[in-house]
Image 1 (cartoon, rainbow, N blue to C red):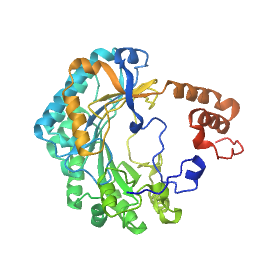
Image 2: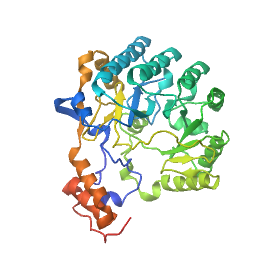
Image 3: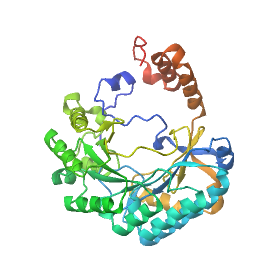
Image 4: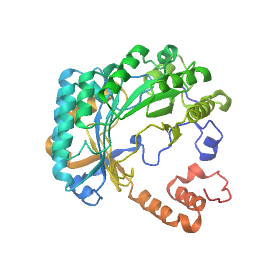
Length: 417
């Protein structure tokens, strides 16, 4: 497929649609590379404050792979692979128990993929391990799990709730059948209703529903109708995600087969991209119904429980990732296994993880060293009060961005943000 030239500088990108990609304040997983030498996790974590960590378990399995998904996941794995995967995560827990030393966990989550693809017994095994091996007090620590409607069953939800999981995030995407077909994700609203009923019956304090805007054929009216359908279930949280089409995803393959010149949003004309209008209407709709906007994506209901857990600051307090595809964050190194989207590559990475011995979990082999950026950002935070946020942020960007990216940007007059 021949792609139109992608604008390469910051100024060129700023003249195009604002929906080009997610903007991350940390290195994206696609930036990770094989480390020049394996990094000792014992030494790495010894230099990290371990008083408020996030434990994350990645389950790279699903019933079906959504057309928009570019996460590390595969659909319909063999049962033997899933069972071996759960056992390997437990083995990794035992190694990390020795590597981490004294620690305290402030957050816990299972993501994917679809963690509720696992059986109730497999979920019990992992949650027992998190409690008994890692030392996560799930009963008192804010803890969440991601789910898809078709994998929500009473026995799975009973295990999760009894072990202390207090938040379930359910991927709905849309209540319009045509829009779900456009996402290559067949789903019936009756399955959604049954899943939400099961979650409510299990007594989880927080239900989050995910919706997507920018779907092919979606209109302002249909998006607001999906939001109203979601609000009928009184979710404590609601997330709005813009649709992006990526290479190797189902929608990307469809675009290729149709001979699309590009599916990169950077080449879209501003007037041809409706996502900003859809977002603004959805945001206003939720605010008018009492939901408080916490971030660009997250909205919280007035009846949502307060976050009573220990204080946790992402990127500063550290994340301990378990399972292939899980990322771990320290102040100096972000690390994980390799990453892929294509099914064959994903299976290869999972097979490699399953073949590892216990000693392999004592070192990081793949990641991104970011000590310099963190040192610069620390200087940024320290100097904001003295020099003004705008000036310091500009200095920080100039210090870490490639010169070619910012060469044609006219410096604005500094202002306080």
